[in-house]
Amino acid sequence: RRHRVAKPPPVQVVPQGRRLQTQTANAMSLERMPELGSRPVQLSVKLPAVESKNSDHLGDGLRELYRRGEFVDVTLLCAEQAYFAHRAVLAAKSEVFKQGLTASTDTPGVRQEVHLKDVSNPEAVKILLDHVYMMERVTSKEYNPRTQEINKDVLLLAQNFRLPCLTEQATQWLAKDITTGNVIERLMTCEDFNLDVLKDKILEQLT
Image 1 (cartoon, rainbow, N blue to C red):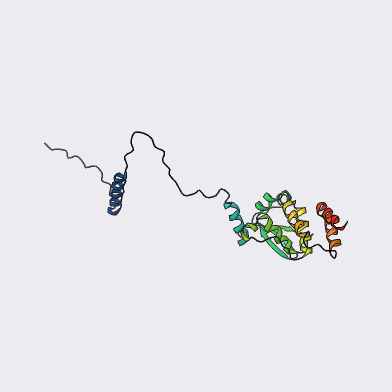
Image 2 (image 1 turned 90 degrees about the vertical axis):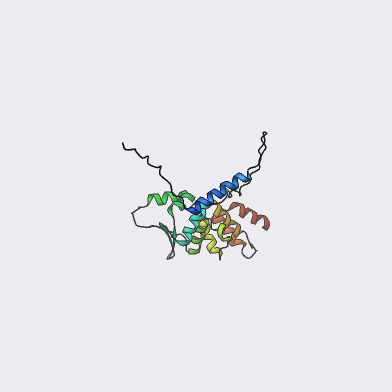
């Protein structure tokens, strides 16, 4: 009569180094286990600080794409200069951009174009885009157009696209270095762009 030989259970092969490490860790944990006693005691466990909730990972990523010119899908044209941006960012920042980009023909594979014929200084468009992408957060560069004419174009763009914060920056710059030699020009700019608060402040100085 034959005896049936039972098959041994499957054996899981563990690398020697890993097995030794696990055994050592378990032994150390058991050796360090203190006497807990019968009464609960409050423990103070400290972990590394959580990264600040103010970190703007999405904004940082979009700014980097803008800086590199990657995944751009709209071109702003001014005085034969081209500036590239992202439709979603422009639409999120400006309702005027949103309506205009939505209404224009969207042919797959063709980048949309926005022609800015009302302004003659391309630098103003660059200032507009830097403002939309909040580039000052990474460059620490203050608003400082090279000329008053560029600042006027920024004011025009800011008002056309309803960007009140950019209008405020341009107005603050307009209020700098006012003299009796340029005050009439500044008042005319205030009149053109309905900057009543600044106009009244200037007139107070003249009366």
